[in-house]
Length: 128
Image (cartoon, rainbow, N blue to C red; front, top):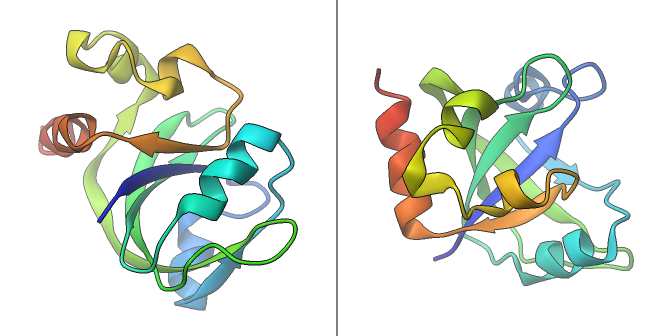
């Protein structure tokens, strides 16, 4: 199993929209590196949902219910649970364990891998 982070503008499509839908095709990715990452997603992978815009926070956890498919690539997601406490980008940037994460280094990338160490650190931060 792999871990990922998917960004979304909550004014366009939010975590709450995903919960309401219970399953949704994740599309609209245009960046070549983000598309490559989306194609690498496999059924069962876990995904942080990150709200962009004024929120700039990891808000919840979803699960891939399909492999990446199609051209351009898409993947089907189902929500698992919201984080107890959303983890803000400022918290992430100030954490030495997360300084090498693509979320910090490549701010415009909409689909990115998350290492198990990064995943666990964000979960730890969400318990505060």
